[in-house]
Picture 1 (tube, rainbow, N blue to C red):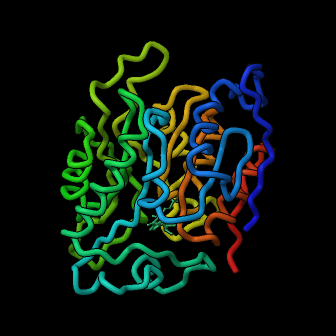
Picture 2: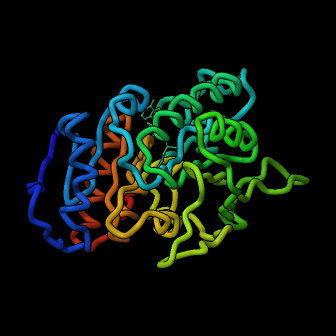
Length: 290
Ligand SMILES: C[S@@+](CC[C@H](N)C(=O)[O-])C[C@H]1O[C@@H](n2cnc3c(N)ncnc32)[C@H](O)[C@@H]1O
């Protein structure tokens, strides 16, 4: 475990840093660290914790997060085939992962998935400030389930953002309408804030997946995540409890937001850390196939 800590915190002086974040804003992250201890990785207002989301989230302090933005395991597919299935077979149709590691947590049937989601969403809600946003990715099959879980977890359901991946998206065979979109049901902790400095945000994004920008077998495009983190105030704190290869955190670096990610796989924590380091140097790490 690398246990990086490249940022020294000061409680009194407010210093403007390179990416526009202030140490005043780092206080949100500081209070998380007081509860959770030393992160796996930390640099300039971005932190990753390696562990189970339910366990870590239960220790989060209340009222510190500006937005929950996350892409959990979808647990999609018929219960019989999904339980015990390796995501390598499910997401890489020719089983060619190009070297991207597999991941856990993708095994629940729909009923237990809804229950599990409502648990971690509820914990995230407690850590959110009033009027914080909650954005959770899902696919066509689990959409209704995630909308239910978002509300069971305590967010007020406000709408649906669509992400159009383009015409290269999967269709099982001729005769199908392509599974071209993924969805991001969104809500807020209480009333949606009336912002003066940004929004209304687009409710639909057409952004293709580029292999060089895809570091996880279900990785989301960095430009998409850059658009979504706009709901976090500049210098505020995004929370991704399933951060995978760290795309939400990289987008937060690029947009001058702070972020905390939780991730069960140490291999993915390391990939995320390398991407964040690159983004903070002003570079986008390119995925290289094995
Ligand atoms: C769909 S992927 C996220 C991919 C991410 N959006 C990206 O662009 O790289 C979900 C991630 O959640 C992680 N995960 C699954 N169960 C978890 C748990 N209980 N606690 C923390 N992380 C978990 C998996 O290891 C996986 O990397």
